[in-house]
Amino acid sequence: MTLAPERPDALADPAALEPVLPVRPVPARNRLVDQFELGLDAPICLTWELTYACNLSCVHCLSSSGRRDPDELSTEECKALIDTFERMQIFYVNIGGGEPTVRSDFWELLDYAVEHHVGVKFSTNGFRITPERAAKLAATDYVDVQISMDGATAEVNDAVRGAGTYDAALRAMANMQAAGMTDFKLSVVCTRHNIGQLDEFKAIADTYGAQLRLTRLRPSGRGADVWDELHPLPEQQRELYDWLVANGDRVLTGDSFFHLAAYGDALPGLNLCGAGRVVCLVDPVGDVYACPFAIHDRFKAGNVRRGHADARGTQVDGFQGVWQHSELFADLRNPQTGGACTQCSAYDACRGGCMAAKFFTGLPLDGPDPECVKGNSTEALAAVDRSVLPGQSQDHSHTGTVRNAPTGVVPLTLMRRKPASACDESPVAGM
Amino acid sequence: MTAGTQLGRDRRIGEAEAWSLSDSVALRPEPFGALLYDFHTRQLSFLKTPTLVAVVRGLAGAGSVGDALDAAAVVPAERPAYLSALATLARTGIIKERAA
Image (tube, rainbow over all chains, first blue to last red; front, side, top):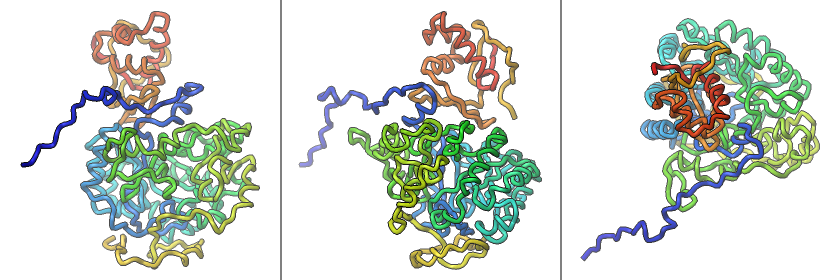
């Protein structure tokens, strides 16, 4: 005889009816920045790297992209994730990669997101933004495009992004302009070699009716290999800050440069590290990280395929479970109380800077940013044992030659990369 | 591509008027208040108190702005501040006037 499983009596334990609420401290001041520090029910700025596959091999790639991961989310899994975003009212996502357009279902997923009230801004190197594609994009509401360019001249750009990539970016922008698309973004990572070109970048953006977006170089992914050669020098940081103060209202920064706020005036934006609080990253295999610059096991909160248990041990599926219940994110949502920076007069302006930049340069997370404008990290950086830097916990870099290889900086570290695995797939096949 | 009518700085909102969230705007409640996102302008805005959230959410279903303030238990002394907050939302097209 088989007994039917007994249904537990829900009312037997009155405590079971008590809602489980996260304990949210009351911020000292009711500024948004104080509220955001405590985290939100859903992120505001979610980056979704759709694939690690890329036709390029930029020397400073944050996600060490190149080869497709065989375990990447399927089309159906991606759609289920979009459904979750819609349910959580994540109004828009930033899609990147790798090169997202390399995925054969990219345009299908784009349409699916838009149909489900999830706006998309996607980053691309522009190779696949043909006149036909540009026309379709121009006709779609809720889609924004961001073209990457890291030098205002081919010489500076191609050195880090690859031969022919400057022309490809210009071609993509010309195609979008011709299709009538306005206000797409020209996205620039600021390096030692392009800080002197800020006016030129602005002029290029204006020529194509685009909006200029400047972001900070991070020592993340392959960026760690070239950080020493590429990160802006101290006097260039000042130059960048002054330029942003003069032009900030017409230029986007993704709140990238809040570490520069210690110079004086706060820059437009949040001036807060949003990692795990208002920002996160979903990678191609569904892993959720605290921010796009922190793709490392240390900052992995969970996986959308597995979800996360709540405080009571009840399973909460998918991305929502990870965002709302991971221990890592709960920890990041505790306001920082200690550490060297809290003693600094500029702490309220820069809030210690970028967590990822500290981590990958071997600095303590509660200490100053490696590019602290007060110079407070100089000693600590000099004392770091560089042989034990955290490095990467994933690497999808190309192992062979790439058609559009960077022309300038060739990191010697390529030689210490893992051998090609049997499951390599060439993302350039069929391009 | 703008949502709603752009209003001048001097536009005030009267309690007898009827307003609602613009069609292109979505509201997401948060512990501190709410996020507002305008799908047309791609602008994100924030409401910093739960009471203002209750007022804004109640606008569409209330007979008038005054009714929405009543429903959210906004006392007379605080009404000017709420009307001024609504005027700010109106200027950016987040809420729009409708027939009473």
